[in-house]
Image (cartoon, rainbow, N blue to C red):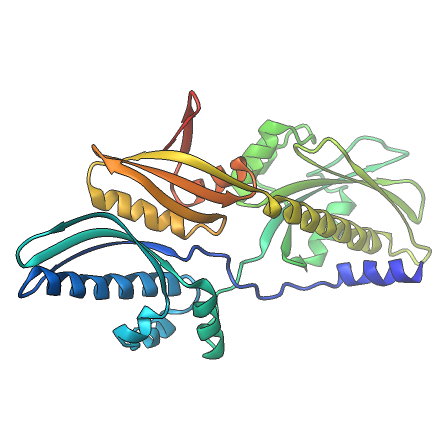
Length: 343
């Protein structure tokens, strides 16, 4: 019992810790150079491409000032960080060289160098969880959400912003949009999707507190689309039932989310996707967006031509989570008869 109490206390008291963002270490580069001959033009183009790809990847891990410092490395020094160069297309003239390249950076070496020089500064922002406190009493069983009689919601609001682990807990605001999205006090798919969009959060939980005695609360924690629920029995002879119930609820949700994310992140998948473009720079811009999405582990070009490119995207987690990540970057994944298209 003592061990369980200690573990429970640690969960409740967890604070957000800096975590280096999980980013892609590939970059698409388009170069065009001119020199005395084609050989010199190609050498110059590769130097420019290596530097551009290196700085592009580095910018995902550190500040602009540090990127400027990294730009002071010589071409020979930068070569140590280049792991692989894939030529998508190239054209060589008498004195010119043009190419579309996909360049992979040595992740381990770059992180080690940046860490030794105190340059790793990008941290993952806390994920936001929306809490909907619903209150009822055994003597007056009607559930209240927005009414003044919702003492449970008031207790959450009095706490202010609650941080636990890698999560920020936000109490649903009393706005017309939230009221219209959650009219019946029940979290179905329609309400869940609307509230996610309105409040810009990662997950939503309803926490229904039922007063079952002067010093007793029963808290029922639910989310969607999960069908299971968790019941927490809270008693406190000192009259701090609400405070104790909030701590227990936050601890439970934090543990659930960490377990869910651990399971989610362990999943790996890949998709073959077609992206259509009017001009090639449109594709390069889209590729850069893809490489900045933490969930995406690699973007490999398998074919290009006729104003479209075929790519294989390797990612962690579920396909639905990938869709959400893409939408947050202004990209939309569509499927038609088993074929995937990126818009």
